Length: 484
Image (tube, rainbow, N blue to C red; front, side, top):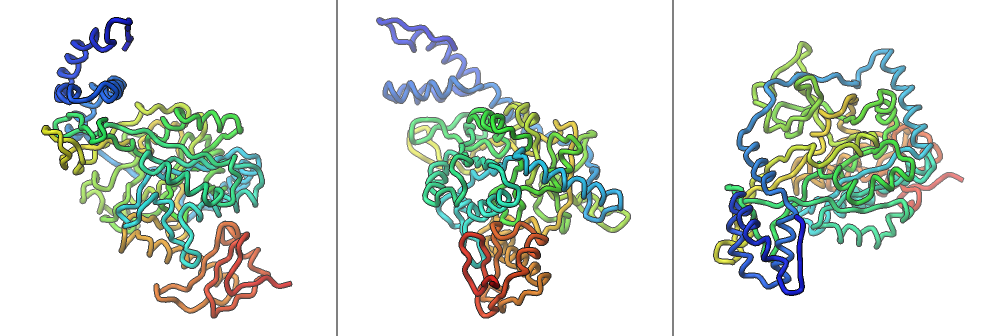
């Protein structure tokens, strides 16, 4: 809106009537009464916030969600499987070489979405600061940083790490990185940036007001990444560095390889826009999104949107027909990331009890809707997609719940189990299981990124099986020592 002003008139008056009409037409007339209760600075700030919104888009988004339209059919997509033909194995070898070449040339950037608070996990602070290391007690951020350091050591170069936060945890995340000196990574190669926010509404589509005087807002989801890459100048930084591909992963999965040469190579050789990893779904009821083919395009359907009968269908080999569990790990080409705007991705709704001001100006819990965008909704826009199957026990153990399945305890156990498998392959002795039921062993990415590298580097180790073992390049401690 163009603003006019003069020394003798308030800049608000000429637009008061049309502004009021716009609010009424958009179903937001309740904001007018609230505006009259605010002092000039607060009123000006709220007016600016409201005027920056597309009020019609919010109402239209809510209306579209209520229609509940869903794709009519889902089919299995083309995938690169674990069980491979000789031709596929040859392609895998070529892809690993291509992926390693990209890493050596510094053409890859690490991209982590870490906007969550860990309140569901009974942890105060960013989820990335949650300790899950089975022996070291290291946090999710530290575990990923160790793998990034190991990747830099193996391939060289200044591979950058971009970390997307939310407004709720941005400052705490920045402090965590500063206090740990970026976990040993060069400060100039780490960028921490916040995602955007979206106003929340009640079930009638009316904007909610916060006790602070502004609108109630919530993070715009991991799909908000594309807008934040642009608005926070991350694309500009990546372009300057010569980045061609983004290796995307979520902070809550400590098993994920941060930059898989096979995955990156398959993605690059196929000239794919966006690719995804998946694990075979365990059973029809597992709460994981599914990679599917719908309308001739690869997409992802939430488990709650899949009819139970369809989820339970089996193929000729007795496997789930739709078994391609999305683990939120993507390879994204730089041109594709730069081409996606926030409006390209649809809103999803999440009904929640939201703290907001009631009609009497007191804070109450309102049953309302928060909007968010999902990164996997960019998949149908990709011209080429690679879907790579991976082993669950090697790459997927997310931290979602305080206890039980997908908890810090199961993630720690999965990390220890992976290390124990590597120890066994190397012929190294294992300490007896501890109180948590698993042998207390852990391998940092600084020591080894995968089993093959571990077997090579562990050849010169002696292990004291009476003590917990943590192998780390820069801070080795435990019952292990190198042979001289």
